[in-house]
Each structure stands twice: as structure tokens, then as C-alpha cells.
Amino acid sequence: MKNQKGQALVEYILIVALMSILIISLVKFFGGYVKDSLTKTSCNIAGLEYIKGKKPGDGTCSEEKTDKIDDEDYNEEETEEDE
Image (cartoon, rainbow, N blue to C red; front, side, top):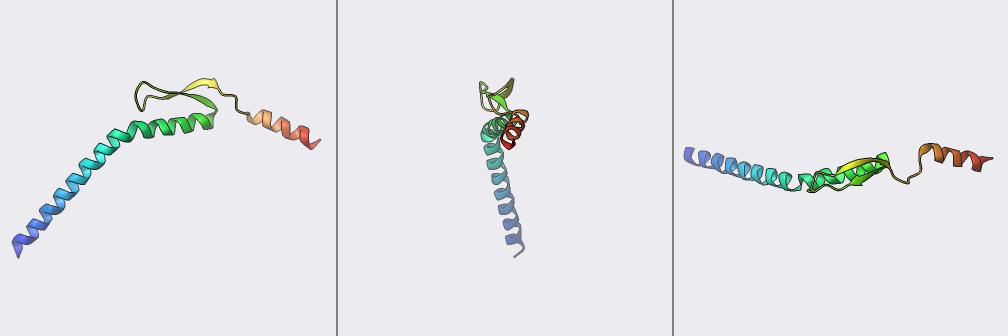
């Protein structure tokens, strides 16, 4: 009976080790793509242009603004319509 408890413990440790290796590999493989996706979103929110990098995870935002409507322009349009 005592031997079976030790065997179950070893099996659980092996499962946890394999799952850890799998998760680390997936994060390492897809990490750059996730980082690029978040960078694209933050560039879009900030009104900046996204510049793709040479490899996944190297993308950056440019300093140039895109042609999006600024808050000041939007507020001026609202006041003209209200009059």
C-alpha cells in the first residue's frame, strides 16, 4: 500500500513537470506575437503609427501621429453643431 502512494506522487510530479515545459514553450513561441498585438493596440489608442519589427516582438510605435481626430478637433466640431 505504501509503495502505491509514492508511485502516485511521482506520476503527479511528472505531469506537473511536463505541463510546465509545455506552457513555457508556448509562451516563448507566442510571446512575441502577443507583445506585437498589445503594441499595435496601444499605438492605435495613442494615435501613433505602428512600425513592424524584423521579428515578432520587435514592433514599435512611431512618433508621428496618424490622421485620427484629436480631442480638440472633436470638441470644436461639437460646438459648431450646437450653435
